[in-house]
Length: 50
Image 1 (cartoon, rainbow, N blue to C red):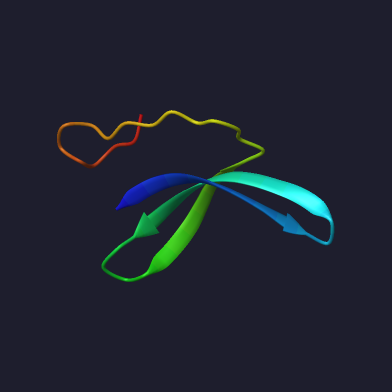
Image 2: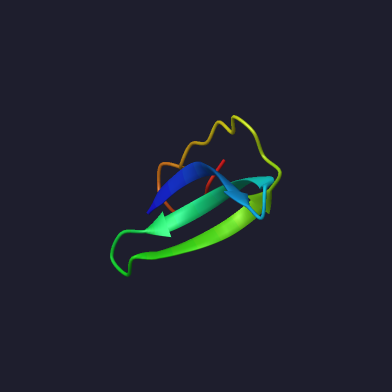
């Protein structure tokens, strides 16, 4: 999985969010809204996002 900060515009409104992208399924899930410049790190087990 990859955690990424996505920015976009919908109906002329700027949207910022923190998403997790599953590379195996191709699915993206937003886990936080209105986030700018998020710094993330996976735990050593890869099961938790810090």
